Image (cartoon, rainbow, N blue to C red):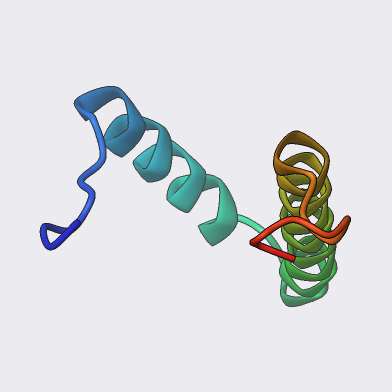
Length: 65
């Protein structure tokens, strides 16, 4: 994976739409939204870790654990 992952045209459009929405938010709205988004990112990361742990049985005496 030496090459950076690029967004599809649809994802680029979605990002631009999102950027326009954020520009219209107040500072307080943007701060609240940022915290909510960060929490969701942490939950997603934890979910991926749990799925991988379950799928590969990491931590139960396997080579990976």
